[in-house]
Length: 208
Image (cartoon, rainbow, N blue to C red; front, side, top):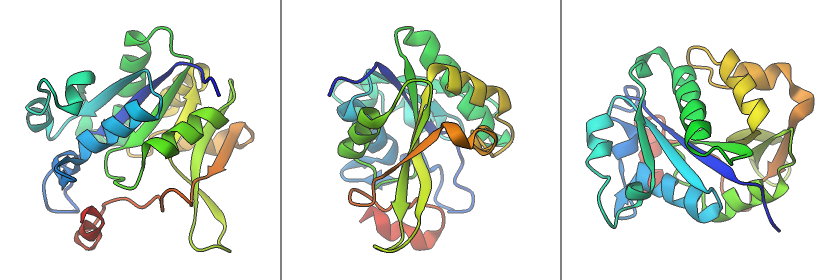
């Protein structure tokens, strides 16, 4: 199925303070790093461009932007206010993605600390997305569990800009999604991933 042009954004600015192993973007994963993995699946899943928003680990991420490595195909942008929370990174990412990819109808937002996301999951979201709406990956905790909205999330251009206007602190697009529930479609991706992130030392086993 043909999909509309989508600009991908990887939010990768945090310091990983709670985890205690430095910025999550630089955690080793499958012979590379988490930020390389997530940017790769966005490209392979159908995003026509990818912006990586860095912050605490900006120098380390920039060092990975070498010929033959995944980040060489991405635009890196530093959020100088990364310590104010995810909201500022969301704004920087959306603005950069739409400025650089003027043909993009949509913006897909992904978190750098979700090792389970895949190109197949990204492709499913892009295929299901309808213009003027928001499409989020959903995950179930067990076969009979409720479908819970998670990430990645695809925003049509207008909705991405609207979410950026409301994005504050560590909430990212949460306020926009809370106040516009009728615009949000949740797509079950439980067969492809569990939606879990890397938040505490106990979660590091997910990287093995």
